[in-house]
Every structure is written in C-alpha cells, then in structure tokens.
Length: 117
Image (cartoon, rainbow, N blue to C red; front, side, top):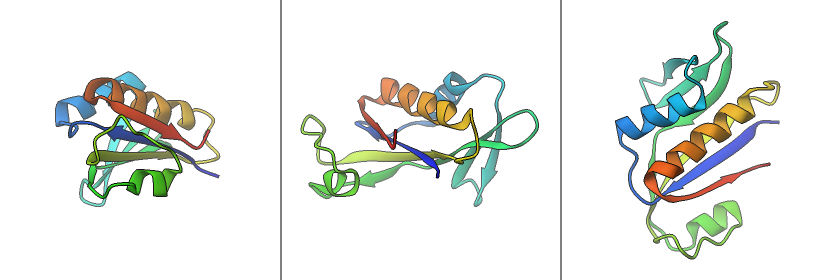
C-alpha cells in the first residue's frame, strides 16, 4: 500500500519553494521528471523511486478538502493549493522522504499537512 501525504498550502508553491522542500527531504536525492514535468520523482542513488510529487492544484470549492480527506481545516481559506506526494509501499525510506517534503513545503507556504499514517 502506498504512503500518501498532502500539503494544503495557503500560497501557491513557487519553484524555489519546491526545490527547497526537495532539498529538505534529502540533499543526496536525485530528481527525475515524468509526464513532461507534471510529476517529479525523488530517487535514491541506485535510481529506485522513493517519492512522487504532483504539481500544485488549486482547490476552490468550499468543503472539498473535508470531503476528500475527511478532516476539518477551518483555519485555512476556502481556496488552497493541494500538493500530493506518495511513496511506494515497498520503499522503507519513501514514507520518510515524502513526509519530509510535505512538511518542508507547508513550513514555507503556510497551511496544513495530511498523511495516511
């Protein structure tokens, strides 16, 4: 089963914020793009994927975060930037990498994080 983590960002993550969060997840990680840059993968030195990151999506519908995640985030504005990250279930280090990325991104943009664990 995959590990899923979501950053619910108050402000749209910039390229600089994304790079900083990736560095916080592990400075020695390699980065690979997939789907013409729509997805980023953080990989170990041997090339296996530790985490996959989707680009930010603006969620504007009131109550949509609650509907999708089952959590109440009353202190967030109705419009938030949703950045989803997941790690393969077989990867021991992937969950830690995904969680570190999401936490670092939320620290820069403001907002909340959510994960399956």
